[in-house]
Length: 240
Image (cartoon, rainbow, N blue to C red; front, side, top):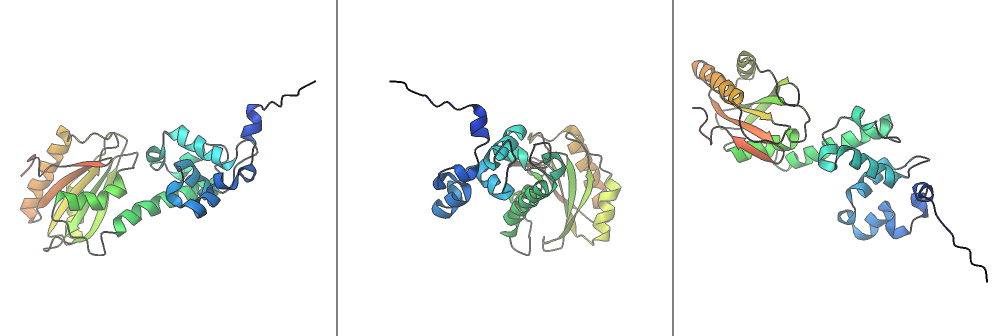
């Protein structure tokens, strides 16, 4: 008796449409039946992307995106223009992903309420962490507080490379005066994930704090956001 063994090449699997999968394996159907929590990162991304390409279905495109950038936490640091490096991620899809990532960050902050009172390093990190922890370049912010320590606004003073950014103390205090701040909090991120304050960080904080005292605008703290960690220079007694 002759037997014919059916073989499949890798291309057969790559070209398999999501519609050819069992319903329980299709991301949208899986979400409806088991909830969003049951989906993997690539499956959730696939729902946002909607379609794949002739060579890769949408799930494989999503996995290629995650693999290329090294996972979800690294992916959400990227701007839409960088996402287009993956075949199948055209302009509209890339913009859709960046919008979704930004919305997720804003949802984290929205839980704090309309009036943001900052009386501790934890308060500052809760507000600025979601905004800054995933940035791929170093950004320096100044937050303006009234006499009740309620934040009346914040301003990005500078943006640099992955390791440093140039900050002018005069510009920090000019913004504080314009915004009629009673006190300010300095915040910047370390894309490297290292929480240690550098000598430059400490010296800059001291210069701004000394100038602020002369103007009657004290520096309450300087927070360094490093991924999901942070450090308070005030708590570490690195400036007065």
